[in-house]
Structures are given as C-alpha cells and as structure tokens.
Length: 209
Image (cartoon, rainbow, N blue to C red):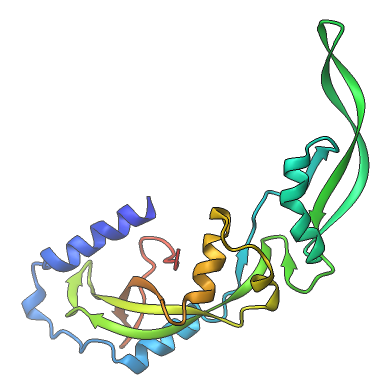
C-alpha cells in the first residue's frame, strides 16, 4: 500500500504542477552533499534485522524437518533450545485426545549482542551513490523532488557468512553480502521547507524496503 501511495506522489511530481507554481521561485535541487547528510540522518543509524521464524517456537521431538531448519541458528548462538513437554492433540482409539508430548522450545537468545526482539542484526544502510535528482515541483505548498539513489549494507557481522545462503529464505542476507558491488536501488522523496531540503514524510514514513 505504501508503494502505491509513493507511486501516486511520483505521478504528481512528474505530471502535476501547482496552479501558482510560476509565481514562486523554485529552490535549487538538493546537492549530493545535502542528500548524503539527509540519508545519514534518516537511515544510516538504523539497525537492520533478519528474522527467519517467528519466535518462540515449540515443536514435538518427532518434527525432524523443523528441528533441522532451526539447528543452524542454535549452533550460531542466536537462539536458545530447551527440552519441554506440552499438550498436543493425538488420534487415539478413533478419537482426538490431548496427550503430553516431549518437545523443544526455541527462543531468541537475548544475551547475544546481535539479537533483539526484532531479530538478528545483520548491518546498517550506507549511501552508495546518487543517480538522479528530479527538478523540484510545487505540491501542496511545498517544493518536492524525487531522488534516485543506491545504497548498500555496512557492518555485516560474521554470522551472516556462516549460514546457508542458498535457501530462498536467506535472500535478504545474500543480497546484503553482495550489496556493495550490487547495491540496492531506491527512490526517495524530499521536500523543501524552512529553507532546507528534508525527507518528505507527509504521506507516511519512507523506508528502504
């Protein structure tokens, strides 16, 4: 939905001009230095997190496939595993009955410095290059511009290279590792207010994903 909103904004920037546009002197496009400063302020201190499953997870000991999928995260010290018992419905004597079964409980290892409630830290965004900046357009009493840029992931911890990145679920981590040579592309929208350019958040917070 957010992408649809920003697509509509792009249409306004490219095809719509405010009625009194020519009565105002448009500001200069933001410079590369200004864009770098805004990107750094808005995004480069954000921590990026990856969460392969919704934790906590409790499974029966007989669920070997799921236990195998969770094992690498246990071995990396990113999640904890402990023995448990819980009630589960089983077909017995022709009817469903609740019985006590042995299982495993998996939870986030909050003692690991790379782990938070949001998941596993895998880096921070860093601006790579500015590819294009649109001419400012007058919309809703503000001048707005679209900035087309690339960014990559910085400060990637060692654990990222210790997981099997061939799995489809790991695509985000795989892209993060290759992002310096194959950066992410993004279109952001800036507005000119109070004599300076800033991230345009009137239609909701802009994100990199």
